[in-house]
Length: 151
Image 1: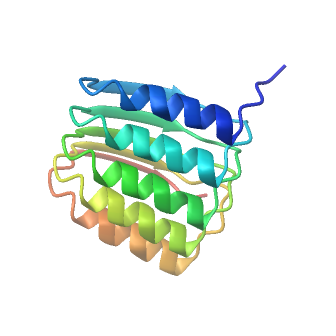
Image 2: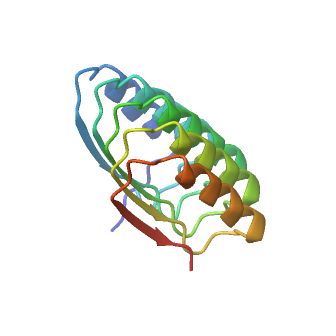
């Protein structure tokens, strides 16, 4: 049996996470649920308030993440300027080049990243999406470990 968390559940989680302002490590697996735009926006906003976050592991595989939704995740990640490790798993969603641009822009602002794992298998990426991700990653000059899955 799987869970059935939607936007409202994600909103409550985002609100709770936002209150954990001294959090340094967050591991959040919400794969195979029904999280879409509003839920991802609330999660992104909650994560953005964790100003001491050094490690973020976020798995939203097989939800309803589209380009518009990826924008909120990118915005949230961009505010986590102390991140050293980011593991973002967004497999089997509907992210295309615009979502990839927003994710790349968010990642680019994480200038202290040393480890990045980006899993976007089973989305709608094309050459431009790969370009935008590459441009964002290129700004992470402190990276020592990079794992990309774009199957």
